[in-house]
Image (cartoon, rainbow, N blue to C red; front, side, top):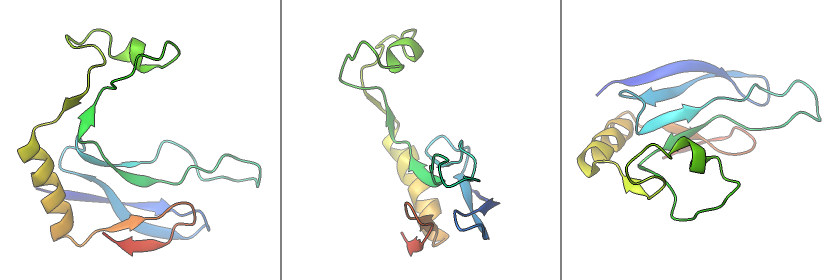
Amino acid sequence: MKVHFKTYTILDGSKRTLVSHVGDGSIIKRFDKTPVPKQPQDVVCPHFLELKWAYGCPFHCAWCYLQGTLRMLPGKTKPRFKEYSRILEHINAARARALYFQRLPFGDLEHW
């Protein structure tokens, strides 16, 4: 399984080549939706790797966006786990590459 890399700007302004996703990104993918802050008052949401092993939610909060986005699925928001063998395959590929994870909120690197 292929591990994909990309150069990211870290919160301190430096650049690092980090994992963007593993395989097709359906299990392990870097959350990189927010821009690096330019002003001290900007929202700080560092880019981090997500392990997306399931989806859905057991709660039924009226205000939650999941009520609308998952409404067309047969089980609606009922939690569903992704195929266990696929999860392990993605995790093992990541571990084989001795990946580093970006720690919140300062961008320090730690082994996984």
